Amino acid sequence: MISYIIHRILYAIPISIGVTVFCFALVYMAPGDPLTRLLPDDASPEVVEMMKRAYGLDKPIPVQYLIWLGNALSGDLGTSIQTDRPVLNEVSKALVNTIILSAVSVVVAFSVAFVLGTVAAYYNGHAVDRLATGFSVLGVSIPNYWFGIVLIIIFSVQLRWLPATGMGPAGSGGFSLFSLDSLRHLVLPVITMALIPLGIIMRTTRSAVSEVLGQDFVQTLRAKGLNEWAVLNHAVRNALPGVLAVMGLQFGYLMGGSILVETIFTWPGTGSLLNQAILNRDIPVLQGTILVLALIFVATNLVVDLLQTAVDPRIKRT
Image 1: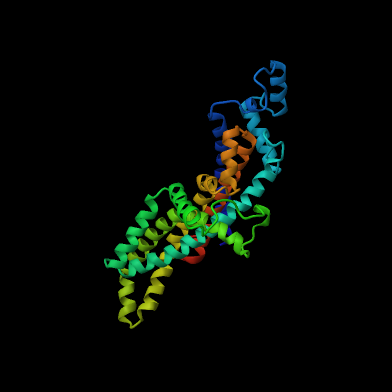
Image 2: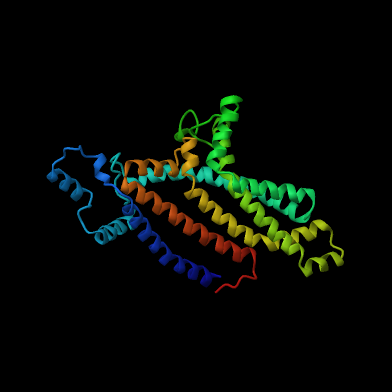
């Protein structure tokens, strides 16, 4: 198992390097100059050149990449062009808020989807199965940003049951999972974020459990006199590795794809930070945020891969 872990970690290194190249190059594909928001329209060429030297934009792009990569490996992601604060501090604060939202969303999505998917697979072809399948298709089909706006209109504007935006009266600094007021601010964003993963995980669970229930060993278990609960438990354990892989991918999706949801609910996470960086052409913040999110996605896949081998011993560890 140790050699397998080392092998998977070594395999993730070139992927991470490729991620850094992509993150760095992606920002330069967009049109515009990041210094235009800092300099007045009548800035002299001397001032423009001075600012480019200050931010290292006067060097060739490969040299800029190597300098940026070296600084990033030492924990220095640069300085925000707009706020003049370290990018690492900006990303760290936003990342904590996004992890809170994404972790709660994926736990809710996985818990509900795994139960409903297992029930649908057990009652394959019945009304319960059709209802659960229809719900999963609906969840995958509805855009989450539109769904979030609908939730705000219903529960915040009309019914006034839940707050529409923010993390609480005290802001992100006063947020606590043990505070009722903070949890009220978390409800609508979590429901919105969990909608699509819930549908995907539910369909995956139903397909995996249904396939296992149709295998010969299940009939053998029933012939030996095992009750249905024990049979279903065996089926779920055999279907779990595939479901875990999808759950890991969905967590990575939630971490990186929350920009619209966080913007709608004014949730101060990496999605909102990315949105502001894009609008302001703040290249250091944009690069740092994309890099951190991409590396988290790679790390999540690595962890899920290792969990699969722990859950399912049939997976070859090479």
